[in-house]
Amino acid sequence: MTEGGIARWEKQEGEAFVAGDLLLQIETDKAQMDVEAQDDGVLVKILAPEGAQNVRVNSVIAIVAEEGDDIASIDIGALSKQPEAEAEKVEKKAEAVQKKAETVEKKVEKVAKTEKAEKAPSSGLSSPAAEFTIHANHIANAAEIEGTGPKGRVLKGDVLQFLKAGKAVISKPEISKPAASKPVAKAPSSGNAELPFLVQSLEPSVLRHLAQVELAKRSVVVQVPATRLVQLVKANRGMTVDALAARAIALALQQVKVEGNGVGVVTDGFKVAEVAGAASASVLDLAQAIKQARSGPASGRPAAVLAGENVFTPDTLPDAAVVGVGAPYASVSAAEASAAMDSALNDLLGVSTSSAQPSKQASTVIDVRVISNSPTVASALAAKIKGFLSNPEL
Image 1 (cartoon, helix red, strand yellow):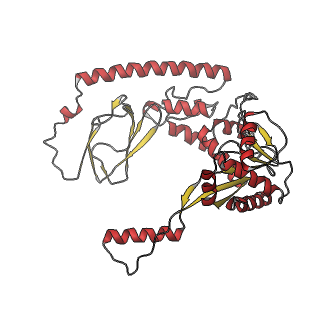
Image 2 (cartoon, rainbow, N blue to C red):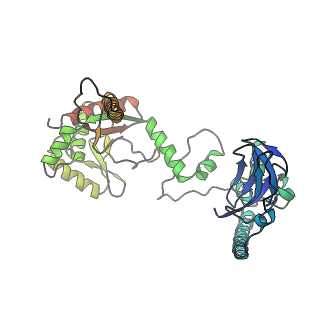
Image 3 (cartoon, rainbow, N blue to C red):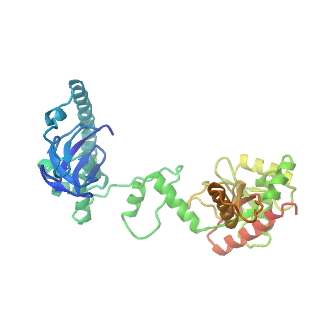
């Protein structure tokens, strides 16, 4: 942000204030913000009045002092003047902002005609933030919003208060159906007619978070000792963690009843393909089979699918258990971490301990995550897979 406007002064010249009091409200083309007092004092002189626009950041907008301070030596006139070069820059910026505002206004008018939606607020004046909030919430009776800004200007807070009071008439837009090739997050069924519109209005990052929360509800995560597994992979060229994981899943499926047949992987086209002979093939052959399956077409109806992180959403989960195997990482127990912290603090403070405890080397582990609509199946599969991966030589 390089400049903004003065929406409202909450204190008048000569009025005292205490720390935490609201001094003024400033607004930009994107937001409206409150400015609170950091210390006690008196508002001596306001240099930027209400309604002032294009006020540069770091400009002097007011003079404050403590009660009893001598302000006779302050040249208020000099503080209120702007250099000519700065004024010219502000003027050019204002012209650019005005052009941009006109462009935005034309686009808003075009959308309003198409959707037969928003009317202008009663005062005819509204901040850009207020305009956006009206349009985003499809308020059809925006003309009824009373503005509290200068000259009746409608601010974002006025629109939010109007919505909160339940006075807004919402003009529901027609929601176009997404193309079949693009996955779209679906809202949980709750009988609320507004929910599809609200879900489509969410930011992508919020949708991803909601998807992760929903997947976490169906997941069981176990930590598997992986020191021997990592050593085995390093010692045998062509052997992979995925191959060992696929074999562990295949062996686990022999002991846990799940609908479907065998183990599958996700293809390059985000389809599911079955890996033939996952339970009987050697690990080296299984690594090649996984590679071929990933580059081939969809096939079979696996009981469990080996997949990476963030491959599936709650709406794209296959009709099978999904198993994710994370990368190996070093881990220490809580007791060992606490002992290491105590030792480091003692060294920092120069405190000698009676007996030095030998430091234990961090162990290597991996996280295995099983996603299933059945918590019983997820727990059973996770436990069996952990057992097989903990003993990869078997």
